[in-house]
Image (cartoon, rainbow, N blue to C red):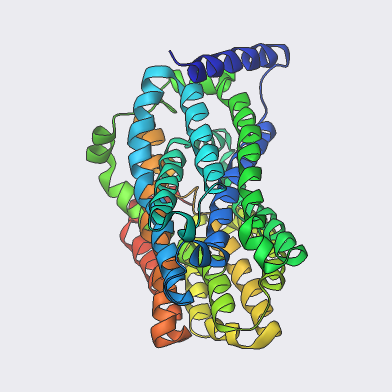
Amino acid sequence: MSAEMVGSRTAERDLSEINSRHSHVSPGEIAIGVIIGRTSEFFDFFVYAIASVLVFPKLVFPYVDPLTGTLYSFAIFAVAFIARPLGSLLFMTIDRAYGRGVKLTIALFLLGGSTAAVAFLPSYQQMGATAALLLTLFRFGQGLALGGAWDGLPSLLALNAPQNRRGWYAMIPQLGAPLGLIVASLLFAFFVYVLPAEDFLAWGWRYPFFVAFAINVVALFARLRIVVTPEYARLYENRDLEPAPVMQTVREEGRTIIIGAFAPLASFAMFHMVTVFPLSWVFLYTQNAPDRFLVIEAIAAGFGVVAIIASGLIADRVGRRTLLALSAAAIAAYSGFAPQLLNGGELGELAFMVLGFILLGLAFGQSSGAVSSSFSPANRYTGSALTSDLAWLVGAGFAPLVALLLASNFGLLAAGAYLLSGAVCTLLALWINKELAQTMR
């Protein structure tokens, strides 16, 4: 057994002893572990996404124009979403063979290591096309790790949620997205503001990637704290959180996986329309300073946090399916006019971001809790992981690339049409899957 696995076993044993002295872990502690874990994952996500706009086109693709370089960066950005299902397959095997703690330790060190490795990325002037190959390799490692980082804690929250509070508990994991964006945006804004452009491109941009590794270490222990609890072990032994064979899950739950992946497409398309895409558009097509827009993103993400919390309260009153349908319809309306606000100056950009994050929070806040209760207990853990992988691949993986490609060739209305397509897919998925709709009420 490797030193990494031995270390993980030691950490699990120590945490188990702590848990035995402090009774059971409350749902509130589970929620904190989930938020810390998701914030670390999304911080890694946004650090890479922001660098894809501000850094990689100049560092790795200086031989093409800025738009083409950004499109190349977004193509590499999508590699992680392709690798993510492969990571789920690989780490499910590790999970069954060595346990959840070993799996999480390897996955989070791979995630942090791949992210930190980007900090040492050479430039095109130093290594030519090898720089792009290395960036692709590191991004692939991030995707594998994200597939392995699935810990079942959202399912654990759902299983511990009272019948009338499922919407509230479903929104908790989603808080990690805006929190991760706030930290990543402000960190990059600081370095962009205080450093000359030459210093930022030479070394300043690398520091957020080092921070990502440290955050992942903290997240590892927060999640192991929950994974070794008696409640988690009991649910694992009862097969509620046990990884089932992937092919078995696909055969028995294939319809639920597909519908569950398409149900949140409105929120996933919106996710990139108010995070990665607007930063690229403002940076490429306006004279506004990137640090100013990064601060706007952080402020708007704060509204997103409030909206996600509100989604839990609303969903418990009207039902998750109803909220997802209403928010998808609102996103469809937003897609018809809001993208043009990006060309409306500072006030237009602020309105675009704040309104977008409010709608995103209402929709995204319930996208994770819409599926887990629809799976049979034996397939819940694996089915939820596969659904999440497929949803991110279909709804988010190529969104920045497609949106920027459409907008740069046909105008911002085309990007709005892309967002509209996600809203339509959500409404169709909710209409088709009547059985899933009933479980979401």
